[in-house]
Length: 280
Image (cartoon, rainbow, N blue to C red; front, side, top):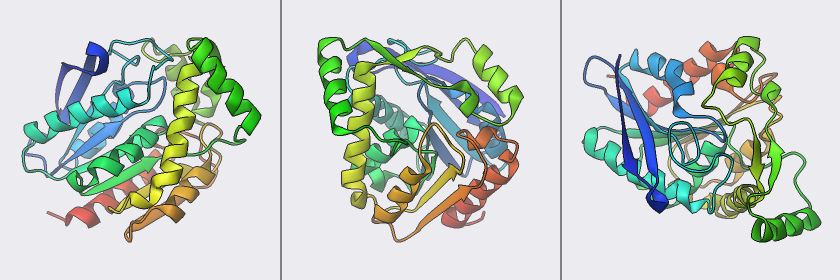
């Protein structure tokens, strides 16, 4: 497997880090991967190694404020910045892998970013895969809570409010330990502005889901306590795609690619993608 890395200028002039993994032979397709909140692209190396072994290239960026990219960890001024940076990187990937089909794959917050991006650019992809997408929360905030959050996001946008629970990442204790000890993972609280932007993004995709019409695979852990499986069910019911598949894995936690059943999950994604691409 070949590995390369680099940087580009993203929204607000921030330096954004990216990396690519490629098979030794010419790849048959590219997975454009969008990671979740607080983590970074490097946590998907094992996924990339699996797909490189099946002649796929994998390209991923670190969102602003994440991993090796510039920005404030746990904070974003506007969600649109994530979409802007994904757009810049997407254009670079298209140029680098000229003519190859591209599958967009997003996990957690990255699933939300990917979904919103598809509303504008879905014709540039052959398919999309979402893993535990952040479409709904359980419980969902009420009107009073949202009003308070919007107020805090305006008055004290960097007020730290919510920390992700590392124990909800995986049932594999090694994965949790590595996550906790990873210096590139943000373990602090997300800001009021970031939370407001996240919920605004969720509302936007819930409203606009019917606009997504390309082939879509939606996967979710049945015992995911970080993003609600109901969000994936909602997306499946409301997207306009005629070719759509929903699979809820009973008992699995949030990071289905890092659960003890990861081999089954990866095989499911590979099989689904190969069916849409046509076997070589």
